[in-house]
Length: 533
Image (cartoon, rainbow, N blue to C red; front, side, top):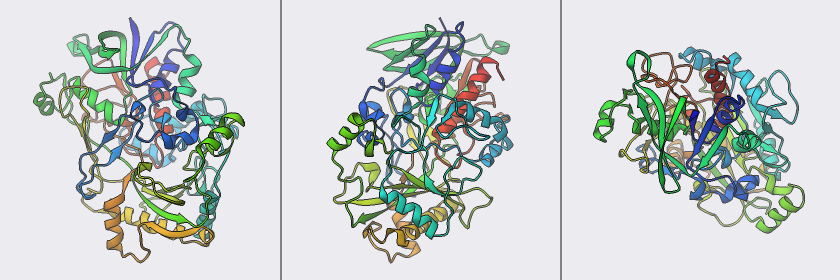
């Protein structure tokens, strides 16, 4: 029998598997629905553009038609492979800022303030620049400067300075605002996913078992909880055409992410009682907030043709592969594509934190790269970091094989603040791309197709073209109130022996990319689970 069963070998699950199996007296089972991370496009950073729509490593989710976005169903890619979304993302290493975590603690996530979480960020990180008060130098997750960057990315940095913003070499340093090249989760020019960082070095441990292609259908319970309550005692899963019930001696740890974790809780009987009964699911714990509080960073992209053929749009795949594999991981193959970015505190910001983030792409990226455009160009992504709109995850049936219903509810806040901020994102993007730094490259506008647009025109552009920037969170909210899904120790309320450890527990989104914070959550969770904290 295993002591711990971890469901999901993504950004959090791989961390848990590593840290919990450090104790040789503990047996750990890690279950992953997807395959091993064998595909070469996973490990060559620029290969991420070739992974778009690759269903073998992607859950391939979509939202329901979004009322505020012209009733479009938005595509939500999520990693279904060892490493999860850290195996298919753009590798930008961002933590957010101290105020993000102090806000968590103030909202009831006690023990998750900045001073408490910083040591776990540092424990995780191996920054090639070395360690200091804010950075780690000996962790498993390699954080590197880009080996290669495009001239258009440097034009974007110059445009930021021309627009009056400071240069920033380290978005995870003392100050976040400014413009610079992203540091990336890479080691020696290759992707350093959570699987590479945390799982690969410990795969031979005798007390760790990893099973891929394992779809968990539900968590099982017995009456062994406190005061005669229910306790998680194992999982039911299918693998290689066979069904299994695997018991757990200590705890079941759910690390499926912001979509799969609430779905599996509900399939297992933990969720809104009425919804569960409607699908014929026995109610183990009536937990109305499971699946609620869903948040995501909505993103608007501004695309421009390039008058010079310097973008990544027409690179020779053969040359990229030659340089990467035969010249020591060099050249454009090492690019994370989203090379440069920036953080800005807008005029609408209610506090000192930046509230807009930019990702610059030296290529034309429309519809997540699924719609290829002719010629050469560049793309500026802009997202509002602190959305007020909230969505939900709901079941469509009682079967694990059926994708859940994703209602992102973008731009649905009653005050209309999110839309106002998206308009600000679009305006600032156009201002940046109009700076003299782009004079040598600027061709005709693509999206939007004209420069003489009113606010009303830009709002319609946002409704027609805005997409996710891949940061869903919050659907299993952590807090100290009885309505929260998990307590500050990440234990699921209403049962024993079950925790959720992933981005779904975030009370609110952090100000930036969510991958590094998810690994931090798992680092701290491992200490909570093992009693080290």
